[in-house]
Amino acid sequence: MAPIALHDEAVSVVQTCKVAAAAASTKKELTPLESLAHQANSKPLPKIPTFNTHEEKRQWQLEHMAAAFRVWAREGYAEGISGHISVRDPEFEDRLWINPLGVHYGMMKASDMVCINYMTGEVVGGNTEIPANAAGVSIHSAAHKRRPDVHAVCHAHSIYGRAYSAFGKPLEMLNQDVCNFYDAHSVYETYGGVALSGEEGENIAEALGGGKACILVNHGLLTVGNTVDEAAFLYMVLERSCKAQLLIEAAVAGGRVQKQLIGDEEAAYNFKMNSDPETLYFEMQPHIRYEEYLHGSDYKN
Image (cartoon, rainbow, N blue to C red; front, side):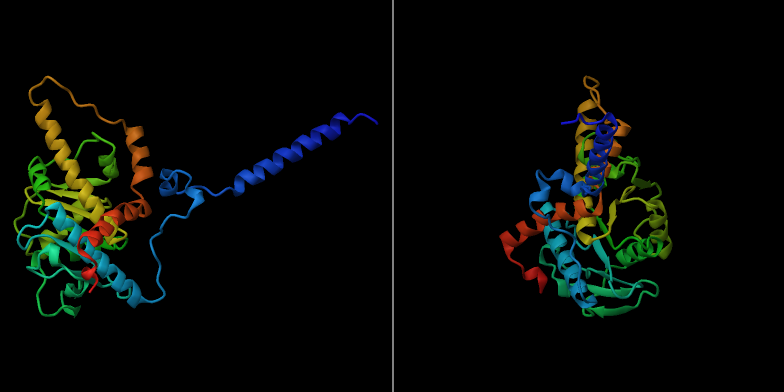
């Protein structure tokens, strides 16, 4: 048998390399959520659902909105009539849904929500028996107007957020979870009283800018998201991040220990892997399922 020519051998190697390169190029790139799951390709992970009609999506949004309030009730965020969550209507871009005044978070249902035209302030649907919180309408309307990309806005007067807000400064990257807000949160530095005027709501929306969250000095916290699940979970992370920073500040006050900050490169990587809409939506689902496990699904009514 004649020996294989060097030219033929080189061609064979090149062809093999091309096949390997083509296979590599067609290999599916994992999303951040899939990267976090061991052997993610063995079973598809839940995605943010899609719907055939506006009615179906609207009902799903309102159910998850009510579920988020139920979760917040367990977290201890309820404070009298303070705090609100809003969701942009899937059909009418100038409408939002917001919770009614004086209904406890732990009792919230999908049918409780009020639909408001945030351009005019007119109540246009949903629960017309109970008014919404005027300050909430002001804050949330301004945020939805300024950020067309935002579909949900969350605000409450939770204890650690209120406490940390008195410092008037952004959070430091002191742990992996707070990196969800790396270069993506701001501070509203001017407290203008209860946000009953449109101007105060607009000032808060301006301070939020293009970020995911805003710390409102002497007031509380605000987060936004592509889904109510994302915005509500981000609020929970922000509240706990405020608590962690307060604990750390107290520990270092004596001067015997020092803080260790996460570097910019690592913080940016954490943000990329943990703070995309799909991952944050998924993060909220165990909390909602646990709420159903404890109390059933009457929040959907």
